[in-house]
Length: 450
Image 1 (cartoon, helix red, strand yellow):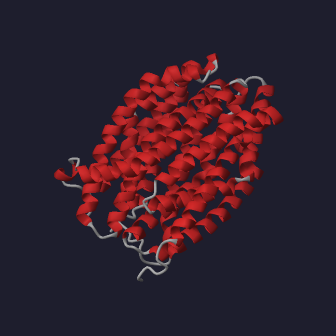
Image 2: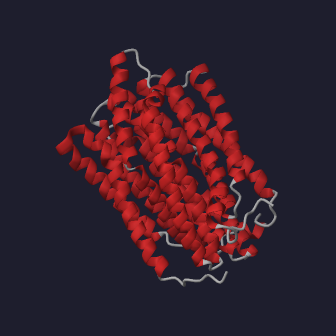
Image 3: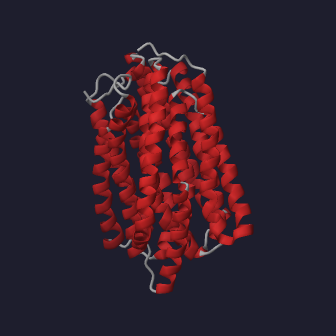
């Protein structure tokens, strides 16, 4: 039985047991992202790494918008699963698959057309522009392939199966690393090779998830379930749109930072990019705990077990803060040696300049890493309760804080001020999410009938 009923058992144990496979999967994903950066930085040079960095926030904006819908879709699936509505689960799954296909094809078409104009708008340095555009064309063109994995992984996690996405990501990691070596070193395709390796690896993981989904008759949709139904499709879109907009707004803030960063030159961009490749490691446990808590909250919301939601969120927040301190401590000690793996240049002074930028940026984020973990915990709890509007508003807060910080702080502190834009965004969003969560949770019945 691959599904898991998260409405029973000790809350913290249920959440951790679900989060660990997600964490392992996210670790695999981050490791092969780092391997991408290693191959590009070491074998294609620091300018190629800067090209990937110049494209990072723009790709995050596009993917975040698309994945926001799949996140929202999984909420309805988990709620119906928790309520024991098997037919409702199948219809939700079928409509989620159909909507994801439509959304990804549309976004891919628009993104490919706008990629170069936006890179010009961001004043991407001329010496990295071509590679950045090539990187985006490949990723954007393959958006439906990438979406196939994300929607299926979201469906499986919504019904308590965190292991299948883990195995899919393990498989994808092996494929990606092998293809990185072949495309970047063997064929010398540079950033285009790294992008192609990512797409193919994600395609393999999507096929694996589909094969598992076909073996789960309790959630596998029938042909009629794939046809869009007004009520279910409407609910899915209402849940997914705020989450998509939330991610898009965060992405806009990130591209604004990228616009400022680009003015500091290729070395600065390369240093920032190296640290951003560690960003995934920093937030890995937060993403996993948040994903587990969202599924947990969604199922218990559907079962009307509100007290379990309270206990689960409380323990999740404590666990998140504890893990954030552990990760911050490790990266304070090991950050620079890891960052050095991503940067290679003929001039040793360029390497040191890049590393200095990367180290300063990393330290600025590590100081307040615990706020990022609280942000994920309370945002996920609200989403599991069906509130995707407040997280969207928190995305606007992130945008305002991030853009405000990147425009104002450098006036007083120079380029060092840019390093703290992320931390300001985390603090503003976390405070809003925590306030709304506690207002909402206090309005619910104290007992949950268990």
